[in-house]
Each structure stands twice: as structure tokens, then as C-alpha cells.
Image (tube, rainbow, N blue to C red; front, top):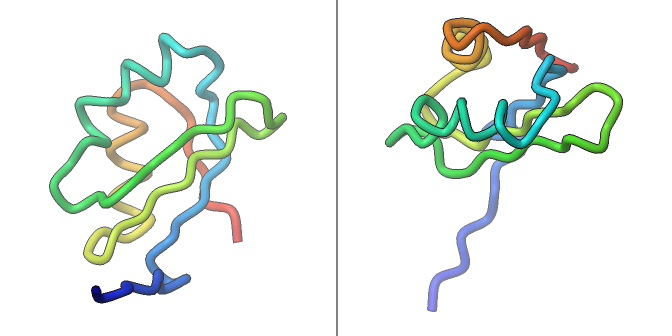
Length: 77
């Protein structure tokens, strides 16, 4: 069995304006993208942190995708 390690450079972290489960569901169609391995939103965090794992997309791509749905998205570094 091969164990794949996660490259930290592939994990992108953002502050968002996503507030509810309905907001999170609204993003499913854009974030369930073939180039996104995994994603989640911490609705309990004050920054509503969005974490995205992607080997090919960069932060600009993710910000544009989330902004197109009407949500604020700022990369956290």
C-alpha cells in the first residue's frame, strides 16, 4: 500500500464571509472541482476559515471561484 503525503504547499487557507451551512452548500458546485482534492469551511471560527487542497490551482483561482458566488475570500498567510 502506498502512503501519499500531503505537500503543505498544496493546502490553501482563506478568511471568508461564509456564515451558514446554506452558504457552504452554495459553494459545493464550484469547490467540488476536479482540481480540488478536498475542502472544508470552519463555520465555528471567527474568520470562517476555508481550507482547500489542490495540486494545480493557486490562491487566485480559489478567490475568484468564491468571489463569483458572492462571498469574501482573503488568503491567510
